[in-house]
Image (cartoon, rainbow, N blue to C red; front, side, top):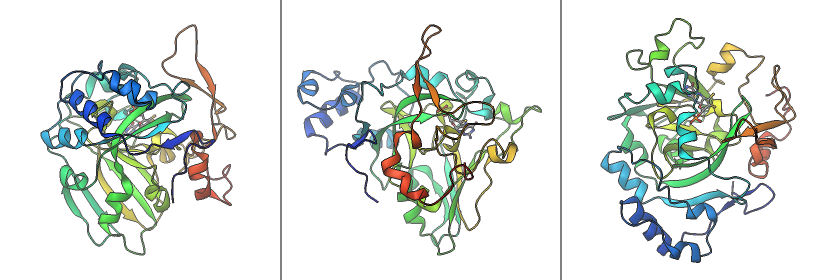
Length: 339
Ligand code: MTE
C-alpha cells in the first residue's frame, strides 16, 4: 500500500532530501558546525530545520552511529509543523511509561539508565522459514534508517510529537519469510528483574514479559516502524532502547519497548494490557475519539508540553490523524467492538 501525499491526513512523504541538507545534517551529527542558512533557504519544511542542538549526545555503538548518519532525514513529517511541534527532547525522555522501571512518569528516566543494551540480540521465530537469534546490528543493518516524525497518543489522553529513527518493521518480517500460517506478530520485552526494578516489585500488575501484538497487515504497513533512535541519536533507555515498536495510529501502549523476541503466530496474541483489563484495553487499540475509555473520554488529548495554566487540550483525531493511510485495514469492522 502506498502512502498518499499531503492530504487531509496531515502527513506527507518528503521528496528525496537534497544532498546539501544531508551533508549539513551529517556534519552536524558529527559534532561540527550546526545547520546554517543553507537549510533555511532551501525551502524545506520546518521539521527539517530542527538541528537537535540541545539534545545530549548519546553513547551509541559505532555501527548505530553510522546507520544514523546515513539516515533519510524527514522521510515522513507532519504537514503542519506549526500545529504538530516537536516535543522538546527533555519532555520526550523524562515523561515516560515503562513499567519495567516503575509506574511514576519519572521512574524510567531515573532507573533505566543502567540497562545493558549492548550487545543485544533478538529472537525471530514461530511461523517463519528464516528464523533464529540475530545480533541487533544484523537484524537492522540491511535497511536504511529513516526519520519519521509521528504523533504519539497515549491511551491516558496525553500526546507528543516525536522524531523517531528506525526502519519499517516490514523489512524484518520479509527477511524472516513468514509461512502461510502466519497471521499475527507477537512481541516480547526483556525479562531481567536484576536490571528492571519494576519486575521485582510485588505490586506489579503485569505478568512479565510485557507482550504486544499486531495483525500481519498492520505489521507490514509502511507507517509501522522499529525505532532505534530519536532526535538524531540513539534511543535513551527509558524510551525503549535498543529497539522498540512505533505504530502511530494506535494508542502508545502498543509501541512495546526493549524488544527481545518477534514471533510470527497463527492466533491473535493476548497483549499485556488486555490481559490486565480486557474491558478497558483491547487488541486493536486504534486511536478513536468516538470510543471512550470506560473511565475517561478519548475525544480530546493534552498535547505536551503543557503548563499548569494552559493544558494545551486539542481534539483527538480518528486513527491519530493517519486515517487516509490506515482506515482501509479496518474496512467493515465494528470499531466499537474491536477497540
Ligand atoms: N513497553 C514496555 N515494555 N513496557 C511499558 O510499560 N508502556 C507503553 C509503551 N511501551 C510500555 C511499553 C505505553 S503505555 C506508552 S504510552 C509508551 O510506551 C510510551 O512511550 P514513551 O515513554 O517513549 O513516550
